[in-house]
Image 1 (cartoon, rainbow, N blue to C red):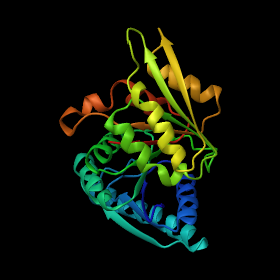
Image 2: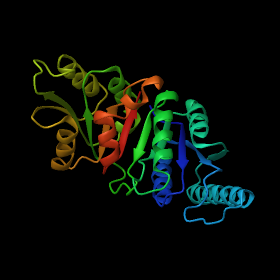
Image 3: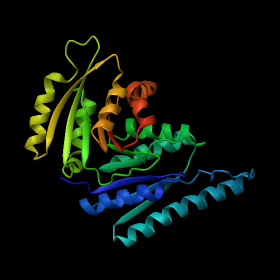
Length: 275
């Protein structure tokens, strides 16, 4: 099992080079083709020009430069590539990317940088792709991912369809992971932790795939679930998190509320998420 088509989103941030390098490493391992997609309407940060025609031309040139960097790096590694420019305002463009992503095995995005003037657009893009593409999303931290390829992964498991899909969507990557932990969090007031009944079966199932997997049950006490997950990541040197994405297109505040929003806003490691 491997990824054959990977979609890489390029933006106006400073982490494109590292994200391209990471994806090209994935492509080498899986024998995959990589398609880079970017928006042709992002005006370079710090631009003071107000003339709309000039701004449009600057945005298109910046998009072409991002694609050119990607193509040059891919050619060095002899990776098959494709590219696609998408136009439109942020909401419309986000939906276009989500639709375009449906014919790929994996989509690679980055975490929104809270200090960027385009933070809201990046968050909306992430929501739309996760909700509407039907494909797994590999989120990279905006500060970069410093342990690529990943060696230790954690599955934040609660037995829901979303995390079940995320786990199976991530199998091509999990095949290369040395140590995998399934973590089940029991919160205050729960008689049985969500997913507790099925956690042992998931452990058995992944072991049948030849993976090195263990099961860790954690009682949260008065701490919230995101804090527990972040503490486990830090204490065990985890460099990849796999979790589900929640909600529906009509409940976008719900999907990026609670655990999901907290982890995606504070994440220091890559996250694979499916909906």
